[in-house]
Amino acid sequence: MSEEEQRGWMYSGWSEHRRHTAEWVRNTDAFLDRAFQLMPNSNELGVKCPCDQCSNKIMQKQPVIRSHLFKHGFMLDYARWTEHGEPPAVSSTRTEEPLHSRTEVPRLTLVNEMMDFKSKYKISDESFDDLLAIVCDIVPEGHKVPATVQECKNLLSGLETPSMKTDKTEGESSKRKRGRILRK
Image (cartoon, rainbow, N blue to C red):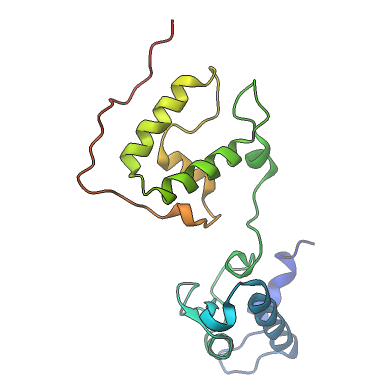
């Protein structure tokens, strides 16, 4: 049984009438202790509150999160604690799929690196699509390099990396038409 499957206590042990099971209280406290130990600077900055009201959108300190969880319970479908130190679940086919026949570089590795680059240099989606078109023109036929930023985001969906934010640079226009360069 996977960790996610063993986390039924998150929902079955909580009660709207605050009659939480002893297992729920024990496991909730253990979850909070673990989350605050794993996340850097959590004592000063807090961590994302996984209660049903905050839904991992608001940073809170440990006593506030504990109070929220006791009052509202955990947000739905949060058995994988990706916002609290657990790595996202990624299928092996997505992570190990090579870019093309002449490399062993995994597709996900390239996409993650490129999305980090996009975010670091604040490259617009349109400009990034143009860059991907150039890359796609260079790599061998039958490659697995995504052709658009949206394909990259879809591949990384659920990973919640900093590069997943959408950024657009105003006034930037593409000087290169999209399309494949003719091969000789």
